[in-house]
Image 1 (cartoon, one colour):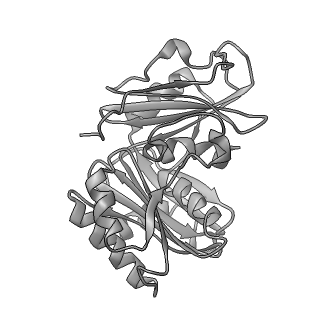
Image 2 (cartoon, helix red, strand yellow):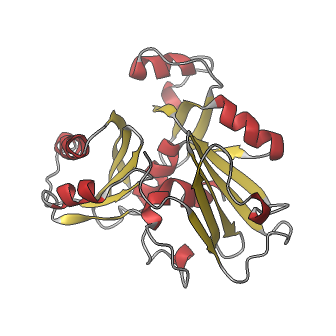
Length: 271
């Protein structure tokens, strides 16, 4: 089940969904849980966030009528990063199968990550995408892995950082250090011990130690028990992957904003 208290309705007083071409709309489409948020394009401020269990976007009457731009992330997602130099047109599915083995059929997409000189090759829930594209034909698909990589790189300027994103039965994990990506992977995780094990494993594989990295954790299914277990092994964290000190959240109270890192962080990637 999603984390508790996943019904969220947060709006700045001056948010007006009827204001045309002023907003960026980000959407999170997952089985049994959907959410959207709005950023002011001119300032980057978060203006609204709404979420609810179910398979439709909540509070449709508060969604921007004519947003300037739209992005979305659809779960579940199967993805991998491939250097541009190693990617030959037509071999995208081969790269996915090399990493994941058997993969489901679906619409194959790729997203460039310019800071790495790589592309994120991915498959996601095609039905959810079709539903959204019917309403917003120009909506841009963003892979969660690409969003988290960009997030981790931007937070690693002063030292090594581990970004964790917990959803349903998976853990997405990024390790970066001084603007360099060390690792990006997805693990099957069902209990708190899985989250801890894979985080420790990733840190070790990158030649780092638990007392030398900062851990930023979030995701729709991250629990207090998982955060507590991580805190017993990591001196510097976990801290929220999206916290109240984020410029986009200035003067806006968003309880447990870190549950929505995969949603809120779409705007920097799409803008």
